[in-house]
Image (cartoon, rainbow, N blue to C red; front, side):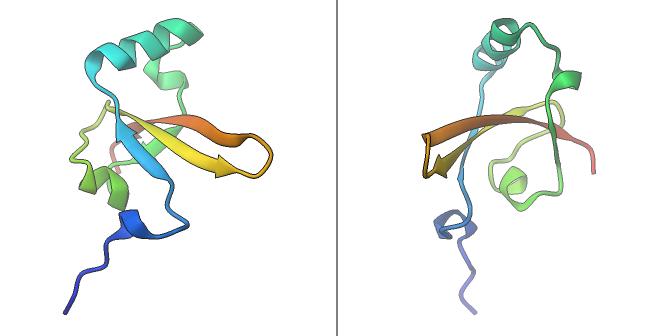
Length: 79
């Protein structure tokens, strides 16, 4: 049976794992801590695909009809 590639589905936005430097820059830019970011479960299929661990930050790029492309960030939590 052929496996479905969820990254190719039109409803799944682009997910990018931030490296340590990018993560620190993000937190500094907004003056926040990891606990203040929205969460994303470690059991999420995209988290598994990116080989993320708890505490990693994922950048999500969603298409928007009005804004073109919007950037969101999520911290990976246990679950």
